[in-house]
Image 1: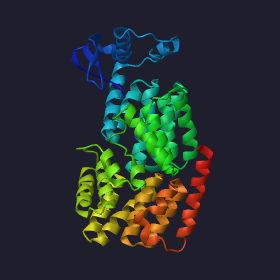
Image 2 (image 1 turned 60 degrees about the vertical axis):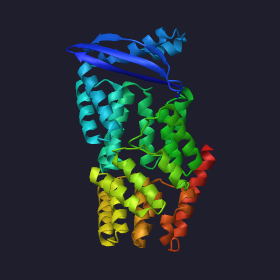
Image 3 (image 1 turned 90 degrees about the vertical axis):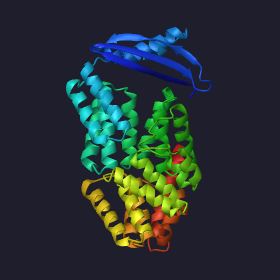
Image 4 (image 1 turned 120 degrees about the horizontal axis):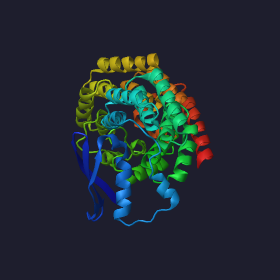
Length: 396
């Protein structure tokens, strides 16, 4: 990523003054700066104004198709748009329930704005997977994406977010071509690269997953920085590299859980427990935070408490229809570490069946060592290997 757009704004009554500037990220040189004055009811045109001012200030020459992309083709109530912006910002802070409220209000006021529906679906999907929303929230996400695409069939964000939903719900083979199609015409979309890396991870293509996710972060260092991590490094056994990719001083319970998980793999029990406890304190409703708390109990030799929280978590997953198979795999690992081999085998099979078949990781994952000699384990790995090989043959 070579340039960075920054700026600030002042609002006084119905008047906005925006002062953006474009900076060369390598040299810190200011390439362009400007001042834009507009009325609040023209809030939706801010991006268009900024883009046009940059083009004019840098004396760029655009092709007709490039110029067309800069035009806003949807009208939306300014109040609805403000709710939309608030919802998107809250999502970036992992406050999914409040993000949903803001975006639902935006959709109520301005029901014909496709981006609102796309981001509303994204928030529903995050709640479904991360906070036990389950099948009801998955269904709402699907409906929101379909609404967005009905309004605007070519809406790119809806296609990207739909691919994430497909990956999470066991249809990763459908997600990959959808994302590749998006990237054919939009090769520099960070989130599309990220979601493709996410899909590759589920299919066990770990090096390719790293490549896509690193490309995404190069294009946009902030892409999903608080709501996702480059797990493929962890699955490849590159624990130091994995920890280096996590943002420092993050208040995201998910990021903190994964910092603890990386330390756990490094046998840093004290450091891992501290991170797990902090993640759970920040957000005990987060699925991964609950798993982390079970590891913390295990480190403290409180195995009964560890198993209780795992069983409660597994029960909520089954009751509410949570489909995220990678998260379910985390529960299988924890059961295996704690020596509950029956539960570990059950949840491992459930994870593979639901669509997480990262076979190269399974073969080397030290957290599964306690169940490798169990009857049926070899068959489960064979099932994962077959789907992984089919995935690799189909897409690589």
